[in-house]
Length: 146
Image (cartoon, rainbow, N blue to C red; front, side, top):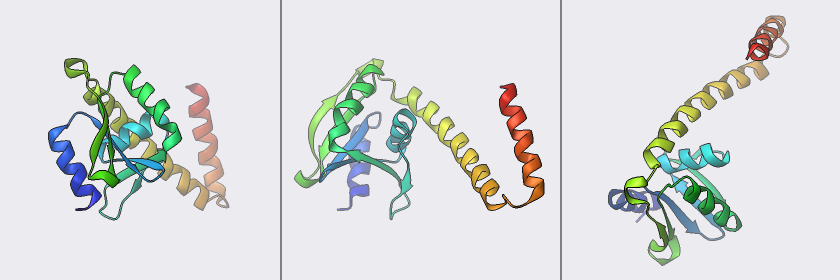
């Protein structure tokens, strides 16, 4: 079975938990969970071969991730890909789980970040264009007002 299929199966059982999959010396999160990690830790999201959002981090960062999730009362599971996705560790805040709330914030953040990245890319592509300098000045004025 593929990783994505296994994550979907686990998410059916634990829909409101961040699933952290240990594979080798890294942990990975997929789908909505990757948005939460990108939002909380500024990790970069990429798309997997199955066009599923994913992000990862080295195993030595797991305690920082767990601590942050615990401080925010977000359920999580750590599973081992090498042991048929056996659960190594689980934190469940039951009715106090803040998964949905944090995901809403993460989703909004990711949409805004995507827009900002698109603007940034377009600015870089057109740096030699004189009109771009005018637009950059306008953007700077807006940002200075904020």
